[in-house]
Image (tube, rainbow, N blue to C red; front, side):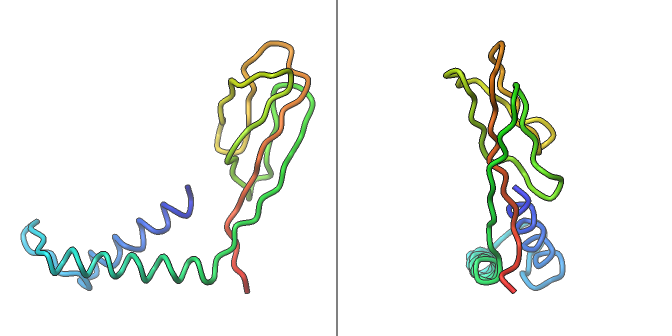
Length: 113
C-alpha cells in the first residue's frame, strides 16, 4: 500500500511540476503516452532499488501484530477460522470465538543498497 501511495505521489508530482503538460483539464494522446512512460520509468527504478522484506509473526489468541515499520499483508487463523480483518495496518484480528493462535504476514519495502 505504501508503495502504491509513493508511486501515485511521484507521478502526481511529475504532472504538477509541468513535466507532463496538461492544458485546461484536457489530456492529449501525447500527454497520456508521456505519463505512461513516466510511470514505467518510476516503476522500474523502484523495482531496481527496492526490496520487499516479509516476516511471519505468530501469537496466541485472536490478535497478531507487526512491528511499526511493517504492514500486514495477510492473516492466518487457527481452528480452521477463515474470517479475519486487518486493524490499523499492523494487526491481524481473527474473528472466530476462542482463537488459539493468529499469524500475521508482515512486509515492508526497503532499499537494496
